[in-house]
Length: 312
Ligand code: NI
Image (cartoon, rainbow, N blue to C red; front, side):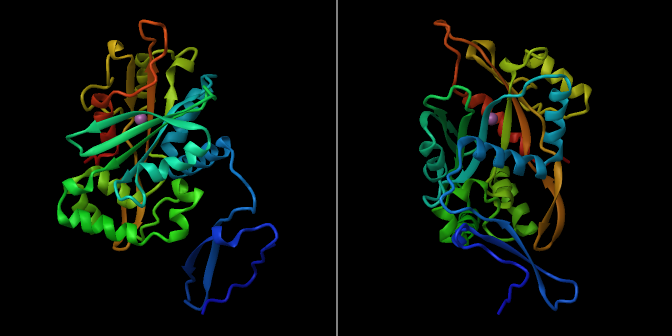
């Protein structure tokens, strides 16, 4: 039995079902230290701003490099708007694109485009807000697990089986990180031989995989070339797969990204450094009718996915 002391909840205000507790054994194994990492106030409905703020906080806390990139633009007196944020998931119907997109649909988003990535065995959809033109686009991809080995399929199925029912139906799912259980480094390495995407997702779970600077909203650094130069001048490593700039002006979308920094992760079999999240940059152009292009280019996104690849 675990006895919790020194904690009290006002049950009038707190919905206990939404509490996540992290347990850490103390040095002498005599008692546990309990950290309440999340709770939700009763009747509190998150605004869209709350959702993005929470995703941003998790993303920048876990990946100090992306915070440095953000500060770089702020120090140049730029206003950083967000072109899109991206999530990764598996095609298991319990956690697929339809499940992850629910919270955004409820906040006024609608489905706008779908994409196939044959080589990486991914399928994706993008969503736009119906009325708030400044709201970032939301891009959600899922891995087609059936295209992979029985090892990968079984590992993913077992991981999803580990997720508690409360999470599967909760608004917290998109912020929940790794809710599959403590990952094993050995399994991570084995997954990586088949799919870098699967390995990344197995470790990090549900969170913003990347935020994206809207270059169109920048004043001084108003082209992707200028942004890339600024990043390189400040020792950030660009994803060079298929060239530093993905896409063409004719396709109405140019994208670049920095490579995800390697960060320490606690595995069941040790602490190892592996790629975390990255920052992306997007410049959009108007079509012949003068309407700004809002979609994505599969060929470009295909290379951007590689920003979380392991770098030797
Ligand atoms: Ni992206």
